[in-house]
Length: 205
Image: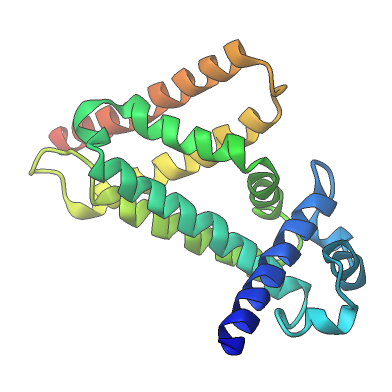
């Protein structure tokens, strides 16, 4: 029983460190602007206790990428289970932007670090985006004549579009509902063009 309590407490502290780093970064700072001591203080622990959860700030950043990527993969899977791909593309895009809306700090971190100074975190984000694209490719409703490589390429392009548009989405005021709707519709249009281009490109070969 004590072991279970200790493990639960460790998980809470682990999550608290991630949340503390996101709070400190806010809308402007990058991970490189934070110190280990600063994050530990925000989480309410001594700096030495930080090392029970992460080797360094880089490892904390990699964990944040895993959190975001894993959740989006789950969103794609949920969309499949709910029949989003059989009914309307709007549902899938809606799920994605709902996640961005409720996890602004986390996605702002991803947007910044995609072109940030830490190579390992950049690579981790690319790996995560590729994993999301692989999950998405399972659900692409394409004619049988379209090769799997083309489907994978199209899904990677769709993921890139969504991440790029999410950055623009985060720059809108939280009450700019009309602009948010326009941006979502623009994203849907771009994704549809990828579908059309993939099919037409295959027919011309």
